[in-house]
Amino acid sequence: MTPGRRAGGPTRVQARKGAASAPAPLEALAPPSQPSNYAEFLRTALPQQVKAVTSHRLGNERVWLKKAGPRHGKLRYHLLALVAGALRLDVLTPVPNPGGNTSIATEARRLRELGAAGLRVPAVLAQQPDGLLISDLGQSGRPPVVLQEKLDHAAATGPSALLSVWHEGLAAIALVHAQGTYLSQAFDRNLVQCPDGRIGYIDFEDDPGETLPLAECQARDWLSFLHSTAMLVDAASPHAAGDHWHAVLADASDEVRERLSVAARRMRWLRHLPAGRRWGRDTQRVRAVAWLLARWYAS
Image 1 (cartoon, one colour):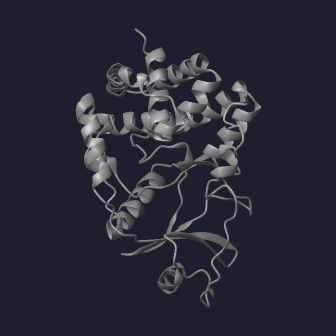
Image 2: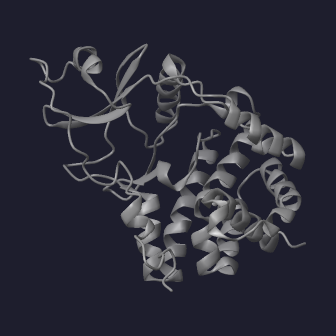
Image 3: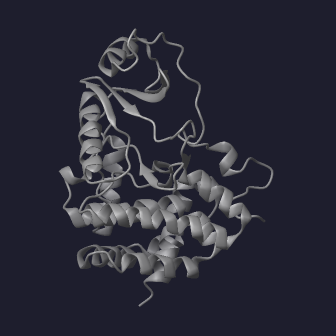
């Protein structure tokens, strides 16, 4: 069976297109008299927008408007905290996403910080307490491609192609860490390849650095990326992927490498979780992560 393809159903590519990978329907709103007036556009468009995140055409630009949503419930964070406590892994400690105006302020701040560090993130065009207008990472009318989608297409081609794209994701995370910072949710769906080939980063509604030290935040980035890609990698070429993993992490700090080694050791028993689909996709992902880490940190 072709990696990443389910018999009798849609592929992950067909079922889960990334929002930044292709132009989404644009909101039918009248632009302001001066298209370059981002603050005015945000003020007038925000009350009319129904969805939490929508793209708009503003003059010749494609922009994204994010509005404050309801505050997130705490139950799922409590359950994850229990898991982290049982494994004695601070790196898995949940970072609550408060939602509402707080998430808007957090995302704007983090985008400015990462942009100032020279990383490819959307520019903050306008901000108010309950809404944020940011740029698109496309260029010259060409949209970016979500790394998740690239991985799915590569998996259908073969292990070599998959590992090449997967390594791009690893290198993109290493670039962030080399600037002395971290991401938020470093899943493959939040990494996008821009038309010029550079990887960009999206989705910063929470800030792990508010509750965790830098080394924990960076280790969390690696585990997040692995969590979102482990099933594809495990089905393709786990041993070769381990070589890529250790080669990239050779430049990580001793503290980060130690935290990942500890995580591998304490997560080993999770590879015995049930493999059946009826247990849920998250269970399958965690099981795949545990298997990969057990192989890569066998010593």
